[in-house]
Image (cartoon, rainbow, N blue to C red; front, top):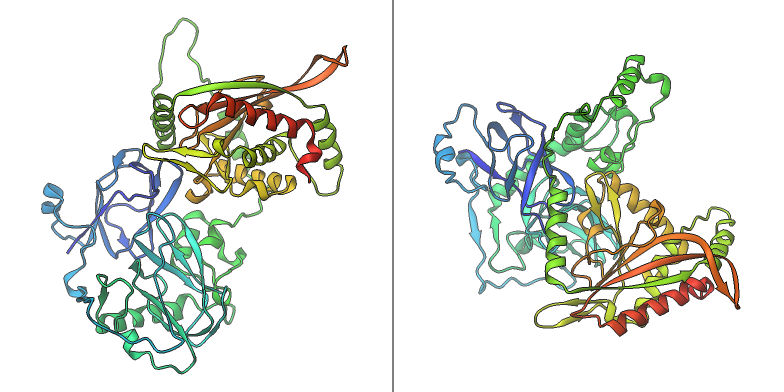
Length: 539
């Protein structure tokens, strides 16, 4: 029986997606873990893999097309299977399973009581993101019989947002693994059991789940899947032996698509196995002499392509809006039209800041920008003015007890806001290193959704473009955003004398529902004091 695959929700704010590229075509054989397509969401372009095996019978959304979440994306089934009924009515749920491999399901009843032996801990599939409903075990870093200590990484689990490390909160021996590598299971299904070595856990393995309404597979099916998984792991995922390269099927597929030589990749999986993240982070070294002369000429010709029509001709070119551009338009329009903005501007004497930065950057392996100093000053000012670190809801005003500063970064498709968590506890050099890393990965579309969410205040800096003063739209649910202009050399009055000075204008946009004018002004005064006396930020 064919399986209908719908447009997935790849981020918590995604409402529609664009198929940037199909990596398979109609008629291709599909294996579980194969990358089907690259899908552009409102936050990034992400790879979408198959959780089913079969033949790709139908593509419902072509490359470049946009479709809402849950619209028919593709159909996978048996070769030459009749899917006319699905195309006419799309009447089959996306989780359908071939009849000959159907899974008998047993609903756990709440009045069933299973005694857990003393010292034994039952670990279930964790909810690692707010939208996660199921997870896939990408890699087990421990095997049955291994000693586990609190803080040890048990496995890498692929969620709806990213692949994340899952650590143990218990000490003991790994007695049982309930979900093998590559398998997918809902949240709260049995993942593993940890306890004293030699403990009898046969009663637990037969179906314990924290959620009394969870569904589990019967013992026969589990044993069958464990056998398949064991065979796969033995042949593909056991490390390096006898000169052979061991690599997970998914990593092997991605490497083949990207033309990466696996012999040059260092594996970080168990026993040196190459896994997905190793391929994604691999950067081959390219020498200039390796680039053919014809390619060099092509690049030169491309750069000379005429982008404007000759004088006297009127012409338009329609460029399809990217998912990121649509998301920006939607969020900023919503902010501007719902939050009553007002703006406060103050001019800061940057003479001391310039001298302090010069001294700091004279130290070995140290690099601090003026933007880093602004971020640090904002974080410290937010400590003293918690009213600015708030969020408005119709029922309550939420005061954030933590300070997470978002930093607006321009990317080719628009704008993203990576977040520095707990920025008030970071030093200037830590802020500088983190901002640089986030900015580079933002432009390469390598940020995870978590790294772009959770801000409580935002900084937008156009000073490096020579902009002296501007206003920004609040990045909701924040209550304020700071716009940073360029440092300008100009005549200033000091001690009744006109001298050459260096000043910078900053503008605070506030949501009047949460931040009154006097509060915003006091925040700017504190910010000014920190920037004009940078030594106070080092205390």
